[in-house]
Length: 115
Length: 118
Image (cartoon, chains in turn blue, green):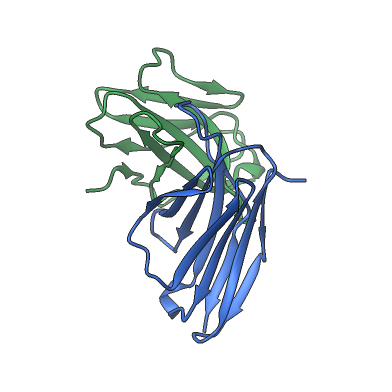
């Protein structure tokens, strides 16, 4: 089992569809993150969950709806997306403590294409 | 203003040569951490090396070392004896301040695409 698993790896959806991205971590971490990676732009932090509580929401449009039912699972629910939402969506986890040197552990990402 | 700047969009390096990837950062915090990640074409972000703002020695991990110049606010990644498998995107990232409420978020640069030539 890899540390952080994301499904699906690829997703093509129309603008009127509803879909969900799933992330699961097997590292015993208690903080989870969604990042968006678009071409030629820095990774953009979308949401942060710590102990299943959302602690950061970086002005993300409401068509993206995160859910964290427990410390091992994170979802990103998508509805009525726009073509500019096409990107690689990366999930990450971390230990969630005050350890300055604790890296984020990433999954392989979901490549989303909105048509 | 960009917090992390990577000025090299792409680099081509001969196999077995050393390569330096540039990173400058901007923060007013005294306590911060700098990270480098590698992203192969598979998409996964792989953690390579960490440097803390109070660390006096430059960090090293195998063939990776970090040339940390605090006064210049630079944290360049040096890869020695490059290999074909080093071809990937490389991202510099920063964590400012002390992790709070379990939020250990990182701010990333735009990355450098490194291609190793046989």
